[in-house]
Length: 306
Ligand code: URA
Ligand code: URA
Image (cartoon, rainbow, N blue to C red; front, side, top):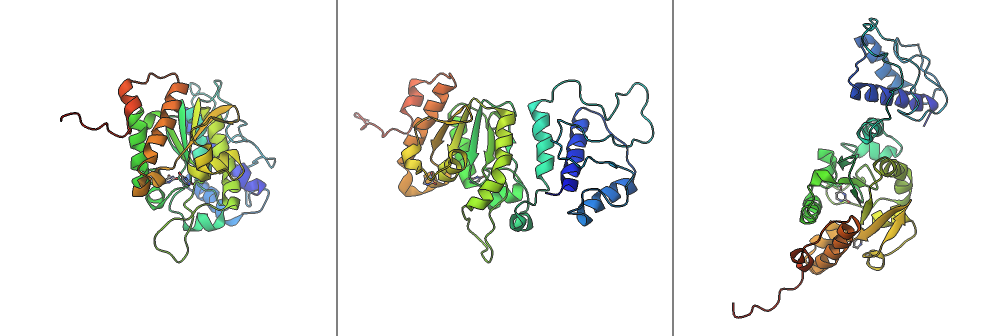
């Protein structure tokens, strides 16, 4: 990414955080148009072209978004004395929600995989509680997710939602994200999905790692082989790693089957194994498990005189 784009990202991220703090900046329509045009016309320069009235003197060094505020933005008219200084760093540490929101706005314009940026309808960032104790990681958005901009909303997503609810959580109490934020393209094909390539995974993984570093869930669940390979590396088979605890940067990680796999009729019996993995997760979170829950998905005992 060019240093100009990085600097612009930093400015946009900072503006997002400023907005989250309830402060707004006034900029003229022409200033905003100049800023927008600069993103389209200057992909490789280190500094903006004709100095627009907003966001001049952007730092040329790579600046982490949101944590190191970029150069002050020109504000017109001058703020009232009672208003906090718009460009000053927030006095309190940013919340997880604020950091995720800033990150979300930064990833929305990602073009690191040009072919996916071209074919996608949305960047599917993630959904759920930024303070979640439990985080699920899937593979990549499918067609439904691409349209709605939210992970796991199609058929597999409905099964994942059921699994989450059966564990005793609401869907919005956990956090859900994917290894890849864009739908893998399928040129010349009007239906179907393909698995992410290694290159796509390596390109996108830093985003997921940043999300995990912000949320710091107590437990991670990797759904299916791609999620396991992305988070743990190597080429492990899901059948040999599921059901056992792994470690991702100090966070306990439980691999389990992907919901799409469970939807195939021949894999019906794997639902019980997935459920056992989820019971381990509940235990790890210190949550109570009822006897009834322990029996879910077990073959029914022969009906006794019923
Ligand atoms: N499958 C995934 O792995 N992720 C989604 O978001 C949807 C389906
Ligand atoms: N292969 C995968 O990648 N995931 C599964 O859940 C099962 C097989």
